Length: 88
Ligand SMILES: Cc1cc2nc3c(=O)[nH]c(=O)nc-3n(C[C@H](O)[C@H](O)[C@H](O)COP(=O)(O)OP(=O)(O)OC[C@H]3O[C@@H](n4cnc5c(N)ncnc54)[C@H](O)[C@@H]3O)c2cc1C
Image 1 (cartoon, protein in one colour):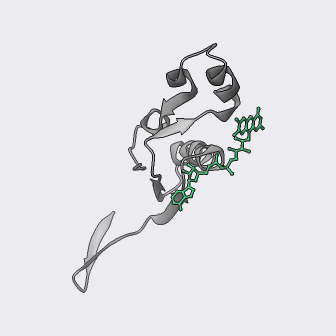
Image 2: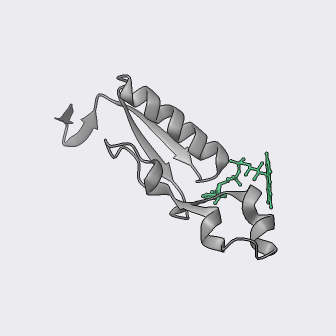
């Protein structure tokens, strides 16, 4: 629930900021997603310079032209839960 206190907007949800869009960040985001589904009251914001997640283990296959570069990246929005608690 949002409210106004001395002209400043506040929320009773805990604010959680995830920095980056790599393996650690995406694992944290997905774990928090599950907790949000279970009722965690938090406002989760993911800050990433890129709007995609790079799956580095596939880079060798990209370099060898066995797969296309687009096969090693996924849009971060795909990992957002339905409540849209994160922004990239
Ligand atoms: C070619 C290659 C193959 C690999 N294969 C494997 C494998 O098979 N198995 C394995 O276990 N590991 C593998 N790794 C290692 C694995 O990718 C890393 O261990 C893992 O990515 C580390 O995760 P991380 O979250 O710490 O960092 P990263 O995944 O690198 O994420 C860091 C994030 O922080 C962001 N960031 C950095 N600085 C800033 C800033 N100043 N402001 C905002 N955002 C910032 C970056 O943009 C990035 O999104 C491989 C790595 C490479 C390069």
